[in-house]
Amino acid sequence: MMYELLKPVLFQLDPEQVHELVMKALRASSMSKTMLELIGQICKPKDERLKVKLWNLEFPNAIGLAAGFDKNALALPVWEALGFGFAEIGSVTALGQSGNPKPRLFRLPEDKAIINRMGFNNDGASVVAARLELWRHSHGTLKIPLGINLGKSKVTPLEDAPQDYLSSLNKLWEHGHYFVLNVSSPNTPNLRELQDREKLEVLLETVMGFANTQENKKPVLLKVAPDLSFAQLDEILLLLEKHKLSGIIATNTTLAREGLKTQIDEAGGLSGAPLKQKSFEVLKHLNTQLNGKLPIISVGGISSGDDVQQRLDAGASLVQIYSGWIFEGPLMLKYMARELLKNRA
Image 1 (cartoon, rainbow, N blue to C red):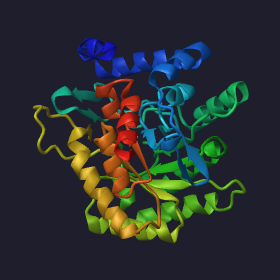
Image 2 (tube, rainbow, N blue to C red; image 1 turned 135 degrees about the vertical axis):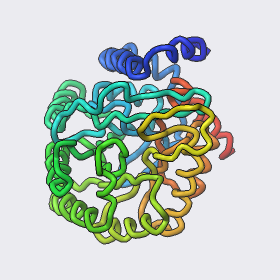
Image 3 (spheres, rainbow, N blue to C red; image 1 turned 45 degrees about the vertical axis):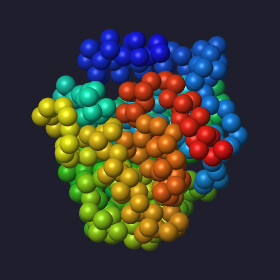
């Protein structure tokens, strides 16, 4: 109820400014054991029936925070207190970068959607790795699995992308529970070309050549766009199996604008409710093709426990949320958990 009262005020402000204010508050909360306990008491679902085991990791529940919210690993402990079963930071690039010119983030309240063209603004792999190392020494290990989403530095030519991703992976390897190769953001020029068979083959061969030689094995996943054809997805799946990746995340934001109520002409990736059906259709296709051979993390338009259950029933091992959390507020995870448990009763 408090969030519903605050939301009209927050939504009058610039979206990126609000995001920065929220991140400052969450970061401050992360530094206070008292605040974390209070947030956890209010927001966190607690039920053993929600637990999920995957990749030898235990997730308190199947609902994770998608990449893009905590790009620089600034507020790690608060995500567990808010009820997330896992959190994914990033996208992190090998080189720190400021991202695209502002404005670059737009709310569409009538559609419960967001358009962003942030452009992988982040501190860079070295800085994020140092931050994670300092956090681990100061506070110990996190209570939930941490994913690290990797993108390509904007200044790196496409032909050098494999080494760019490898540089980030090498610096961050000891800090993440799993890693994601983001080749599907629409906001870095030509990045989506890395989903083409020949370019993706080189990238996966380079990255997995490193990952497979590490003594401490960790899952590496690929994040794909919702705008690919089923034939393109099938080609990607063959490469994932060939190079022994551990899973796929479907999907990133879309360039499509069909069916929007809001009249807006802004470039960037669209997320939220309008992506729901498209991401669900991609999930169903992937599940049919994979037949259980690789785990799928489903993301796109998920805003209720019923949505989560629908994705799990359709073959997802885990789900992620981002836009829905912005529109529904901090108690979203608790409400989702209640619906999930009700469906299983």
